[in-house]
Amino acid sequence: MDADNLAWQMSTAKGRQFVAEILDLCGAGALGGTGNYAQDFYSLGRRSVGEDLLRMIRSIEAVGTDGLALEYAMLREHKSRQEEEEE
Image 1 (tube, rainbow, N blue to C red):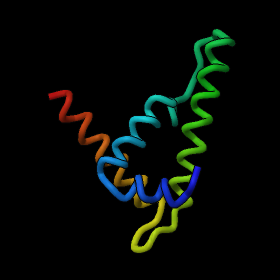
Image 2: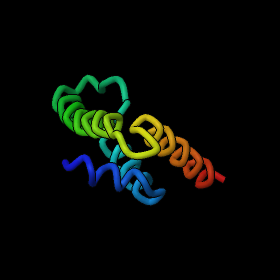
Image 3: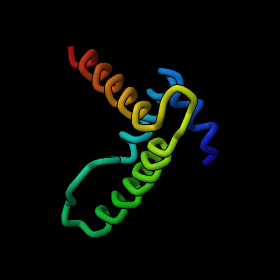
């Protein structure tokens, strides 16, 4: 994945929303297993894609911001959207 393209996506609210939704689909940050080896290995593969994407986000060095700040903005906005959907 091109780091400049990822930085561009993360520079907009819609781009951060898109990336947050991909991370949700991947189960990034999820813990535990089901005890079903096939399902667990499948889930681990999905999570590894999400974790790789998070590492790439954290390595962004854009003018005026950095990857950790972009990740934090993405997570804050995502949480806010989820709370709005619950109401």
